[in-house]
Image 1 (tube, protein in one colour):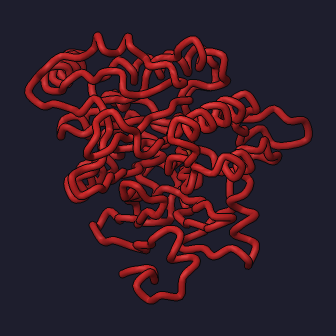
Image 2 (spheres, rainbow, N blue to C red):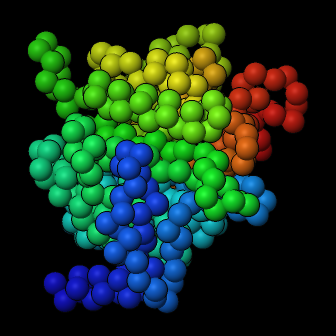
Length: 362
Ligand SMILES: [Fe+2]
């Protein structure tokens, strides 16, 4: 207990409490501005492209922490090492954090102690009960350095907790959005009769919320969709369909079947109609890390980042995504726990071009 209090004090005293840069909807979440407080390590309260026009995201997924610190330590060490190596502008956790060992505080602290903000999208192993799920969101939202915000008047009406829109601003104009990140809560288990209770789907209310905001953002940007990425935990039905269809090129490992919902609630179609999301990144299946390119959208997995207690065949690591300002083209690769980079590709050209410079590298 004493240790926990000490660590929380450290986090609060060593990180800049962030303000409201994230949007639950398009309404700014002003109340989080009250969390600002200057301290030793400052964490940016808005996301922005750097001077070179780049923005790098490190995605960790499926931590599955448990009460055995020795088991967790492996993944904690990996995450710390990979953040040091990649020096991202944002750490994105795509769910299944596990319990015990103050995991939520630790995850945020890995990034915030280095002055890097983070955000989370919940997995199926977070609490299924909506009130408990919201309580976990509120805990994350209270931690300095975490960009997640409490539900607002609009997102309170949506199923799940981690539904949020986070803009990335221009390197040269602090008030101009240059890219958008959409976070969705993909829930836990569906209750469909005749199927195993697992792998829920993103609900129509969330799809409608996305479409409404995506279209408004496109209008705001003069009719041109902002380049956008989406993050959530459970893969879309289109992942498996695309992998098994030779028309769609892929890169990476697929060691298990996709744990996707048995029905399609239309989010992929909404991405196509709105035209902004060019990359979707999920977790859930620990032994898949592939990216498949379907209809102009890269459907990708993170790389399992969890401890020894959760099933995995693949060497652990992370996915890295690097955006370029003013472009829908982006690079992505996996970085293994050994520090080795694998499958550096450029989306879309690694899938659409015969130019050797876009071949997967190294
Ligand atoms: Fe998992």
